[in-house]
Image 1: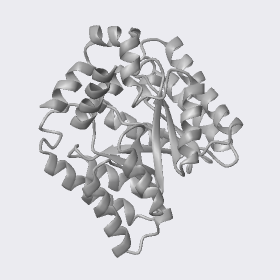
Image 2 (image 1 turned 45 degrees about the vertical axis):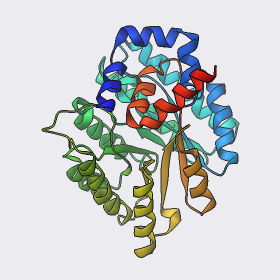
Image 3 (image 1 turned 135 degrees about the horizontal axis):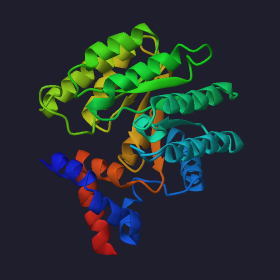
Amino acid sequence: MLRAFFVGLSENPSLRKFAERSSLGRSVSGRFVAGTEISDAVRATQAINRAGMSVSIDNLGENVTNPEEARHSAQLYHQILDAIVANQLNANISLKLTHMGLDVDENLARNIVSGLVAKAASLNPAGFVRVDMEGSPYTQRTLDFVRELHRVPGNGNSIGTVIQSYLKRSENDVSSLLSEGIRIRLCKGAYKEPADIAFAEKSAVDANYVKLMKTLMKSGIYHGLATHDENIVLQVQAFANAEKISRDSFEFQMLYGIRRDLQQKLVRDGWRVRVYIPFGTEWYPYFMRRLGERPANVLFIARNLLRA
């Protein structure tokens, strides 16, 4: 119920306009969003790197409506890649295809993302572009897009995608992606989907996550396991130990500002952790989905507002 409520708020254009323009909205989002400028993301990344964790940087945005917006979004990502090199950051980038113009012109989006992947692949050491998953209308298009770019010579180690365990199709998608050697970020999913294509019960989503996690960990391909669920983290650790899977062969992934205690504990215990750092002016939909995923996030924000 809470998750559906906040997903609904994330799609409300009036609230979004108000929040993104208000100082109060920007203030309360600061726990989960690094800031609005590339320099903000760089500072946050440096702090996370000093704490022993790697980073994935995301310039927030989706569903641009014209080619100029798409090209502007792409230019920011080129600047982020430049900043990663200039500041010697342990980081990669994460993007959404609709932010790169997929709804406007698929060829434009293809050219934009192709250029970013080629640039990432040319870095020393080579960089990586994670193509995020969006709502179910984009699932197949996203997977087809990633497969196409992954086949380009030189791109193989520099592009990957995301699988959401709440979708019933995900087991087949994992099998298909693994057959092509594509790196996967496994998460539970943060969009509102109909019951005919997505598991409605949390227990079913969790069970599918654990099932897919075991498949990924035994694949021999480097994947990211995105979860803040401590029970699932324990199951990952137990499986890795039982199957003698190296801690260097995969990574835990967590969101900026969420379960920082668990992030730090994992690092202390010798596990790899990557923190997803979002920044940018279009933070509202992302922020609302984070509130819906975990009631503790709502309580945290409420307590800090009361202290203000």
